[in-house]
Image 1 (cartoon, rainbow, N blue to C red):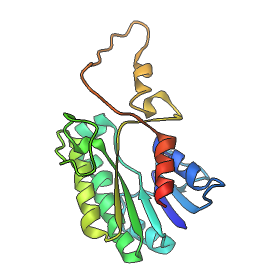
Image 2 (tube, rainbow, N blue to C red; image 1 turned 180 degrees about the vertical axis):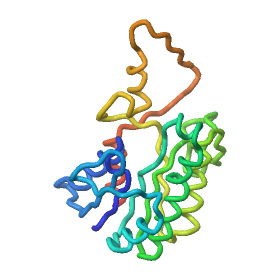
Image 3 (cartoon, helix red, strand yellow; image 1 turned 135 degrees about the vertical axis):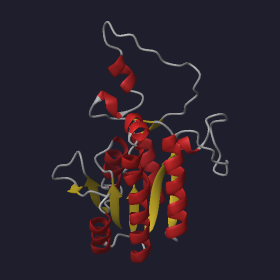
Length: 208
């Protein structure tokens, strides 16, 4: 199977790429990245619509896994227009391109589309996002459903796994904060269900 994977250099993207190209699957995977790229990835700015559309059309993949997203809370909060470019606009571009190519699109969403009151959530749970990131991802889900006839929406919780730096995961970022002579405050009210990136990757491989 020919697969296009966006956000391949991220925490989850690396795990997906590793799993799908392993000896158990051996898919032909083209992984894209932008800020963290090397010879393993194809560098592309997904916010450039024409460039992205041409790239998808030329590759004509059987499956597109759209993992790229702006998840950093400070960017989403302080520069929402920049976050919307990747979380909403780029998703729309890719969904349209996927439909034109006859590709299936697997959209990586989040449990932030819910309000956090009754986890864990069933597949038919009613979305009710209360923060900007969750609202953007829910909008992305709607775009994928409306524009790409062959689609899969995968809502994942907080992710941990093999990181390249402590700030890459919302779990390991806690360790980054625990520095000498630095006061840090954390709430003790959230109930979260972390998922390991390798386990998510294996689940995605099962879908393919």
